[in-house]
Image 1 (cartoon, rainbow, N blue to C red):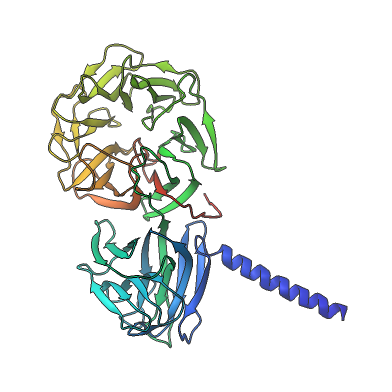
Image 2 (cartoon, rainbow, N blue to C red):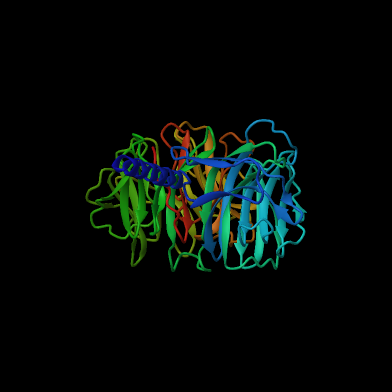
Length: 505
């Protein structure tokens, strides 16, 4: 009897352990299930190191008046933004196998729902069922074979935004779709054939709860620090906080990030995942304009004071701050490669322009004088040019000039507001953040907006989207390239954090 009891206890412990591991392996989601009459049981595996989901599902379809598919989900109230990169593995059996985001009122097969879906043959659409047991309706996207899938809820309006890798979003919308306040949200796979299973991989999976109408200058929401691998376009969240974290610099040795939060600077150890306050001396109200020298020995910082932001210099390991700019506002942005000069954005006589000043102190030299805002100046690693952004042509665009301010030339010319160009350490690429036209004033770069991170060759060429995110101010105000030019660090934002554990390096 005792032996049988022990065996029973072992069995129960094994079941509990299995369930616990399964829950842990679902990342930001709570659980998984097959919805509807599914012949072949589905499964989901979460890979913590890549923060990647591999989902296998069968099911006859998601269509007509009922559905059958595999679902990995959690429950959420209010507004949200769901984003992922996704692709099927293998050729598949049915041309209409499906993957995407699913939002449901219940787990019943005939539930009201809306989904952003990509079919095996490339058809990309917004599908929805308005009432229980009703026929599924569809709005087809103008693009096919989408790799990036996003769906956003604002009240009873659902907007699908989809793109092929590297391209900007195309959107479709359905209004007056009442699924209730608390809904099921998650990723799904449907084989469109009850006798087979299909598998899809989901990367860059994000659930964002946006700000409640605030622009962020008055009220902050939470932050995720992410690292994007440009070789595979996979982004990992490495640190999360309910506080506002802003503008990560990558240190010269590649071991740490320096960011600001609540007036302080922090050095984040990428091996231990532990941030520590960096000593900035008398400068105790630092903003997100801080930049490391090319040799990694010095850090220029911008301290908000009663006369506006003032530039200081400290050792990169921390120490007493030496004031550099006598007046403000002055926002530090770039060192010359030899360390002899700093370039910064300064407001003098109600006009923001780019200025240069000796790093040991001295007279500042005005480099731009065009009407309107000039900002975000940085030297190229070879010292031949200074890149900056300027609103002089209407929208904020990327420009460059010679180190003496001559030969000012526009680099980008599109329908986005492009801010903060950062040249990669190998001198080959430029990264910048793009705000959507008409969503912000050209001279403003607020918090909490839909933005793109984009890159382009320094010598000119096609511009490519490398990240689709909710952020803006503080996302990449400072140079955020890794020393090997293969990765980017940046900040995204969400009002409610969905922890990602374990956090792997």
